[in-house]
Structure formats: C-alpha cells, structure tokens
Image (cartoon, rainbow, N blue to C red; front, side, top):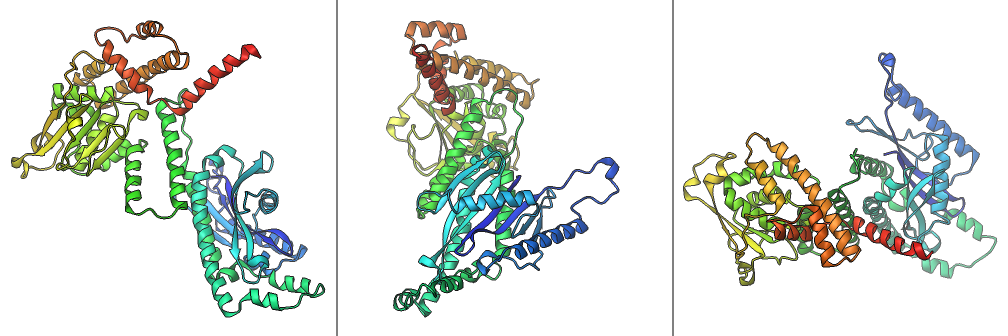
Length: 556
C-alpha cells in the first residue's frame, strides 16, 4: 500500500510536531540490461539512505530547536528497518520521512490533524485531504501527564495516502487496529501517571504554589519537555511502534486487492461487498463496547460462517472426514428423485434442515447446495444445538437429538434430511464414495406439490448433471450462466412490478416475454419472487434514485 503512518504531538512550546514516521519502500523492477548491476535497495543503498536521513534530521535539528517532547529518536540513531520476505518491501521508521516532498506532506497533515481538522470532543477519527497534498485518516487522542497543563498531552496518529477510495474503504480496519495501539499507549501512560500522583500530587502543589507572570514561562518550559518515552516508561516504545505501523501498512495493503472484472459487477459481488462492510462495522462496535461474554462470541462465529462466501471452495477443502464435493456427488448419493426434491425446496426458498451427528458432512452439503442460489438469498446456520426459525435461516444444521417443532414438521415450506450412521460402516476406510456406505439419508416434507414440473432452471441443471461427458467444472459454469440468466429476469420483474408499480395483467405479459410461462409457470414465478429478496441494496437504491430523478425532470 502506498501510504505512510506517522505519530504526531502538539508541543506546548513549538506547536504540532512529527514524532515518528513509518513508510514503505517498494523494490524497483530491474531491466534485463541491469541484471548484473547492484539493485537500489541493497545493503550499501540502505546505509546510504540512512546516512541521508541522518543528515536531513541533523540539519533540521540545527535549524530549529527541539525539546524532549518534540524528539523521538536521537540524531545518532539509525532508525528501524523491516523487510517483507514475500514482497521485498522495506518498512523504514524514523522521526521524519526520507524525501523532502513527503516531509512537507506529513508536516501539513500533522498541523491540520492537531489544529483545524478535529472531530467533536477533540478525540477520535476524522478524514480530510485533497488531491494535491494527499488524503489523511487521523485519530487524535490524549496521553496522561502529571506535569502537563490539564494533566494531559495531545497526540494523533495519521495515515497519509493519495488513494482516497482505498483509504475510505479501509476506515473500519484502520479504526479498529489504531484504537488498539492508542489504548495500549494510554493504559501504559495512565499507570505512570497514577504512580507519580501517588508520590507527589500535582494538583495540590499547583493550588498551593504562588503564581507569578515572570516565572510562568519558565515553569511551562520545564514541564513541556517530557517525551512520550518518559510518559509511558516503555524502554522499547519506538521499536514497538515500528512493528505496529509496519504491520498496519502491510495488512492494510493486502486486505483489499484489485481484480479484473468483465463487465459490471454481479449481484453476488455487490452483496458480498455490502455484507463485508456491515461485518466490519459490527466488529468495530463490538471492540468498542464491553465484552458481551460467550454468547456474543458464539453469534459472531455463526455470522462469519453464514456470510463468508468469498472462500467457499477453500472451506470445503478444509473440511475433514466424509464430505460432499459437488452437486453431482450429492445427486449420486441421495438419488435423482430425492436430489430433485431437495433442490426444488432450495430454489423455492423453503427452509432446508439437515439433522445429524457429523457437522462437517452437513456443512459440506450446505456449501454445495448454496451454489444453487444467489448470495443474497442465503441465510445459513451450519450447526446448532436448538431449532432456529425460518426467518433467521433457510439452511439449518442440527444435532441429532434436537426435536423439530410441530408447526415446522407439518409445514409445506420446509424439508428435513435426517442423517444416520450405518452400524456396519465402522470398519470402512475413508474415501469419497464412503458417504453412501456409511450413512443413511431420510428425506421428509409435508409439501404435496409436485416437483417434477419445474422450475426451468432446475430442469436444465439436471440435464447437465446427468450428462457424464460434462466435467464438474463445466457443470459449475453452466450453473453460473443459468443463475445470471434468471437473475437478469429477476431485475426486469423487480423494476416492472415493484418500482414502476404495474398491474397484474402487465406483469403477466412481462412473464411471457421472459419465458417464465409454461408447464412450470408456478415454480418459475415463485423462484423469481424469492430471488428478488437477494437483490443488493445498491441495485435497489440505484433504481429508486433513477425513478425519482425521472419523475422530477419534467417539472423542472
């Protein structure tokens, strides 16, 4: 990530000053003609760069006076360097940046973060900047000091980058981890403050001492020269901050990556981005509040298992023991009739309940079945010790001793798959075909509606699954194309019926145009209505904004 992290301090004598700065230096790509030449960034280059940094800092020290509160590392200190072995990026830390241009940018960010760009209460995060001087994420905070005015000193941690969108998208991540660093500094300084106050309470001393305008500047000058190391009594403070800032730059740069997309982003992509943003905001709220105990942690893990769709293949490979590997594998184990019945309930939005003693097997079944639906239509609880209602999840895994409520077992909007272990399967070895030999599957549902008519998507999918000449990857791409086709039909129907507010007759004409009318008409309509719930908030708000803009334009 092309960014820079700095710790700033408001000195009572010299104003805002930069105390500590960490920057990332990317290795250059040598040309073929320079293959035998030393690459900039080797050992000699490092020493030369450190020498330049030292000379720059020494000259800066000579030009202006610096008290102890304005200085972090002595002029003779070489600074800190960490090298990322994977990427070759070097993380350099010293009091000031190496380049003069960066020095000016950080200096301006420091002044603005501790003067005019302040959030309410003067303590907390804020964002500011422009294209010319860069964009800044700043978090101001106070450090306790028994000798300071008001018994506290003002600091800020700023991250400067030229990419505004990247910095804004990293807001929850930066806020969460910078707060950990700030809380560590504040707690350490508070212990030192309490110990000093216990030895010599400064409030009583100041009340009893006489005030003289002539002596006041000298008193302020003596109190203003306390360094952050003195306030925290941390012997390795700057090395610790170097590690924290280096990790922050590396982690923030690797958490978001650019990906080449063909065309506009799909609905699944938009929903994933929305859910990831909501999850990061919830994590920030949890970390800011007091610990809620084991129950909140349990729900957090459920939420992560239920909404993390970015690594389904990796999660499937990580499962141990018997597991379903694909839709074709699930169809072979259950049988064509049972598989069609189960898939029909999935596509219609009914609650699918798996009950058994093997959580890994049940989770693998859910990962495979979730591929039938858009991401926005999936609400999953992989394994629970109690029944959860349908509005909470449409995929529910239960332990074998959990009873099913009567209103659920008698409902036509749910299907139950009981998984039991064969007695004769204990001596079998593990393998892919072991599931059909080790387990028995009993499928039950109160629904009396025939599932052999449709929907059309399921009919086409079964043709692909039954064709053994098609590989699993080809079938997966075929399913992806079918989902995109029907998701586009969902968008048209949503725009026509929900946004424009057309009547039933006009909607029927649109269904004919979309090819949803025929022997499987009822199932197709149910599928379309259910998939409407999976549309992203971004798409819905875009449509509503466009409609409102079109309504206002004639009057304007």
